[in-house]
Image 1 (cartoon, rainbow, N blue to C red):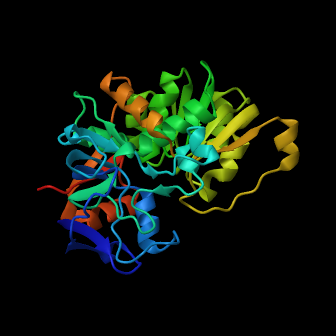
Image 2 (tube, helix red, strand yellow):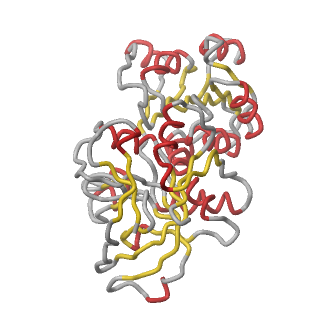
Image 3 (cartoon, helix red, strand yellow):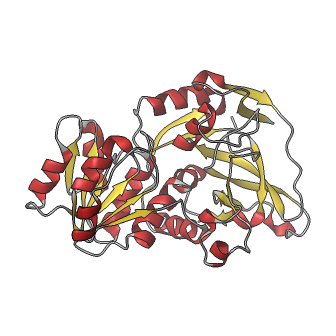
Length: 344
């Protein structure tokens, strides 16, 4: 099969198309013919060496939708032909966190496409059958891949971690990103009033189409001040963070009393400070959130199948153009999810 791999760490130019063998499925595993694979910031961190434990050469990619074409032992034969999305976490199933359904923080868990585990920038992938989730009939492979990691991350953050209540103000930072486009929709679905930030008028217009009530161009307007103006000096109940160092201070300052900030990433850096006095006197909460589980994936696919959650696609590239996809991501030019199509 063809797979995009990097043999050394570096810029987009290190991604190259190789011919590699298809991994035979072991007990409890299946081979999935990949129809669509998402491009994620995680793939960039792997490519640049920012994530430890990567065995070279390596195939990245954690957002996968395709068709089961081969099964290993202990997998029902009728699994062949099933259209599936691949849940991004390989988990042990027996640690205290797995027993609570928290697969993404499993003691020995691993994200698909990290460590020694090759990912979805390929024509086929071999994965445990228990991390595959059926795709509803009225969703395409592109839809499913666009939802897989980004949407479950946003759903886990807003539905499970912050538990948005109807009428609450929600600030979504970088609303044009893979997680941001779903955060806007999920916050609205849960009854929140959304303030979305982005860097261009085009992205802000699309955020409004997805349900944002207020938009802020962070290149032109000071975010905290505009948030306070819109909320009559009160601030927001929830901040959806994933940008990190570049937005952290403004996100903290935008919180109301009893406000909750939830974060799933730090793409611009891990630095950030907190005034402990203000944190406890205003009874604010800082929450971390890591991806989601198989139930989250089933739920977002169901919401999309019912037309409640709209998969947001940016650009589809052929597998051989993975470098171009990474350059577009680095330029922050996308709105929504970029995909690779491995099968020509």
